[in-house]
Length: 101
Image (tube, rainbow, N blue to C red):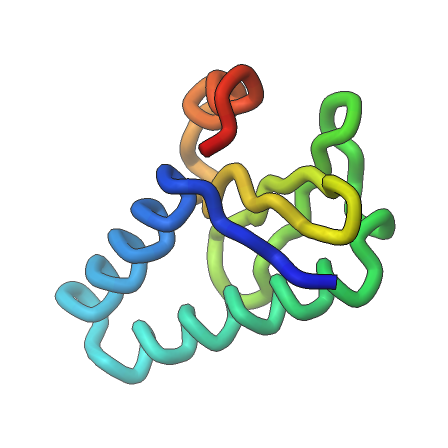
């Protein structure tokens, strides 16, 4: 199975890497990137194992970082709706359910 990040999720991912790069250094930013990629790999291997948080939407926590991947499974593709920092409210990604890009 493959994955695709919608536009806002791409921005969250990029901004989070930049934050870690500026605030914690290149090694932590690289570790974060690897943790996200590893989590996406696990999701693609077994997409229905993660907790369903609303109908057809699942959440998988990222090991080592306070982030979650919020996603849906459509046909043979994982559609990532959010690379969400755990301190953020759910409302910011829920609006994306109406118009995933």
